[in-house]
Image (cartoon, rainbow, N blue to C red; front, side, top):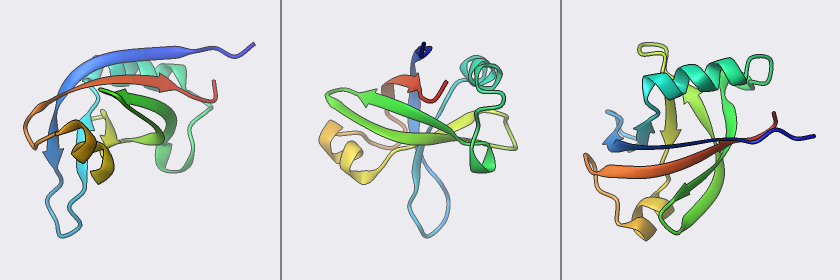
Length: 102
């Protein structure tokens, strides 16, 4: 039987400093702790966790990655999602995140 774990949260979109223009949403600390506990033994390279994500009407699959300085997971927000949902840096993003591969 496959276990489904889903989390919903709102957090600001931010731009990683650097030339590449990567945009992220930081998963809140309490939810990051829960994800870390749930995925012990199931994480992939660099501690990543496969997830299904929904923001507004847009759904996709990606991975969240742990940020060593905060212990929180980072959700990359690709350009197609930002454009489709009209997301702006510093604007709140309503996220539903489902852990895959449990």
